[in-house]
Structures are given as C-alpha cells and as structure tokens.
Image (tube, rainbow, N blue to C red):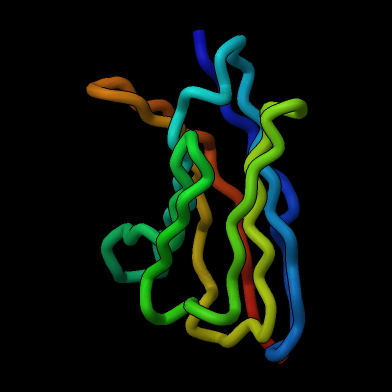
Length: 115
C-alpha cells in the first residue's frame, strides 16, 4: 500500500513563503513522477507543478517564477517551494505519485494566504 503524507501548509500573509513536503511510503520512489495539485473553494482541482522521475519539471502559468518543485529520492520526498504567495493561491494542496496507469494521492494540506 502506497501512502503519501503532505505537510507544511498553513496561514501566511501575501508575499510570504511556504514549503510543502510530501513523503511517499514506497520502495521505488525514484521511478514515480510526482505532481502537486490544488483545489480552491468553488473551483476544480488543477495541476500546479509536476516533476518526472528524471527531474524534468513543468508548472501552471499562474505559478511560474514563484513556485519550485523538487524531489529528494533518498528521502522519498517531493517538495513545493512557494514564494510571493497571493490570496488566489489559497487552496487545499495535494500531492500525487503516478506511473503508467497507477496513481496515488495524499490527503491534502491547507494553504491560506491572507492578511
């Protein structure tokens, strides 16, 4: 059973930073692509950032230049560094591990950007 546990969410003022972490309990973490998604109130879930097993990354346009996804295969962990946060970044953030037809989700962590 693959489990994903997110952490690092919280309340931050506009312009602030947070780093989300997602630890994955699987013996072959390095072969999985990883993604960070978010669901804002009243909106559909969207892909925020993704990183392949080889380290290639992509981002939704709204976070480019502000968010950075990275992974540490030795720690079975993927990170999302979020800088210059805006109120519109407020959402529940989820991480996903996926490979071919298999995908696994974490439980989510709340990020609230407000003054």
